[in-house]
Image (cartoon, rainbow over all chains, first blue to last red; front, top):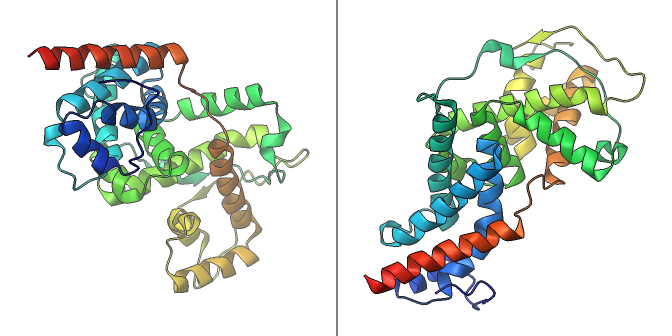
Length: 211
Length: 86
């Protein structure tokens, strides 16, 4: 197997899985090519560590390859892969933090999460206020300041554009839990980004609003 | 933030995620948009939350390095080779 540059004409993931199970040497590498970037990014976001993310990437694909027979085909292949990668990422976090309680379904919400403290308008195109490298740095630092479960949900829903249902399945969370974390993640990021993107001279309304 | 009798700022925050995802039912959406038109603070919260999502869509903070890609392929080749010998 494994010629990473090969590009089978098959476009459907399930068909590629089926071909890989039957021993087609090009099928699994095609799946790797499709999803390695997304899995790496997700692992970086959860683990916040370059080496751990590479380990997660390898483990996720090696496990998927070894357990292709267990893939039911009732979920999308990508969702199944994400679930493996999330589990591997959490194991890394637990190991690194020597904290056996790290999980994505621990209750993390408090009423404080839903307090809007700073209401200031932003310019029309906030991304144009900074150079590309600086923008990357601001956004990375900001998202890294969120709890792991918020980072994962925000990244999967809003950036990778997975459905609420697929995100819930991959993270082993209920649909209301995904929605609740997504709202809190979005509001926290918004709040933290205010200082970079608010219009010049707009100091906003500083009176806290509780929900 | 202002409030009105039907739809308050608290309602807006509760419905904001579904609204931004386009999954809010039509009746609720009309109420929410009527509130947005009257409440400048909620309008700003909604607009800046939308922009928060947009700015993240435009970046790739962690591009997959070529050497990481290469090592992944090698690891898979080794595993496939082992499976072939077994």
